[in-house]
Image (cartoon, rainbow, N blue to C red; front, top):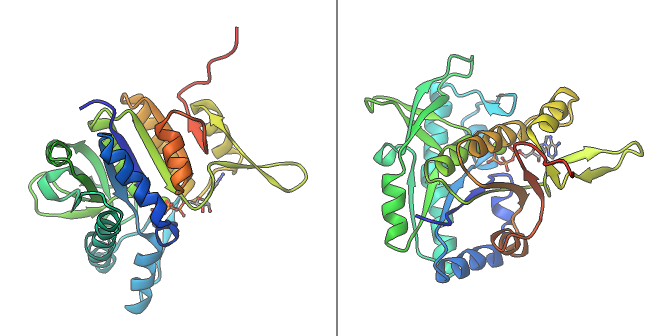
Length: 266
Ligand SMILES: Nc1ncnc2c1ncn2[C@@H]1O[C@H](COP(=O)(O)OP(=O)(O)OP(=O)(O)O)[C@@H](O)[C@H]1O
Ligand SMILES: [Mg+2]
């Protein structure tokens, strides 16, 4: 399918997303634009972990996932957050259908060898079912859980990584990573921060080495570069406003556009 936009909705910003953001998705859907949503849910997961007295732990922006944490992640992401998003889209006039990477084995993973517990390394994204849902005129809303090839285990996957893998499998036109910051920010000598409007793989590696890109931004840039290397045309990291979303869809510059390599002027 041509012209697919994959939108990753960060858990960091989910509660702040205005009705107009969902109305913009409904508008794009009405114009025949195929849209897929992959969502996170960090703060809601942390809130539930707090209730069951588990302290959240992160390594390089990735959640350390013990067995109890995995149950909470599954419950919150596939349950409350996924259904809340489907309801908001429905209220805004869009047609939406929620599932997770476990359903239809959309995200097949193996347990990571890093000391992160029940976190999956995505081995294969199979978007047969999301495509069928798109074909019926619905927005697939996907929670970033993944499943082992034999179906025996579920794994947590960072939502940025899940969105990148799904965008690549769909050969999406754009991956739009919506978060709680306007894009990649870089400190200036006077202590303020500037928005990086366009960046490349080399520059990203430098910003990681310099400690400019840390925590939750790390999986975003990794997912961005992976998606670009697998045929996604454009990756944008921006805020969740209707204006930004409609501008990205129209090909206008907002937030940070990630490129494999910046083309040098002749
Ligand atoms: N250079 C940077 N520019 C902007 N944000 C950065 C940078 N380095 C690290 N960050 C952090 O990345 C955070 C965004 O990632 P985070 O994982 O917290 O949110 P999310 O991915 O939108 O939500 P979720 O993980 O729940 O899906 C920002 O709030 C900021 O603290
Ligand atoms: Mg995150």
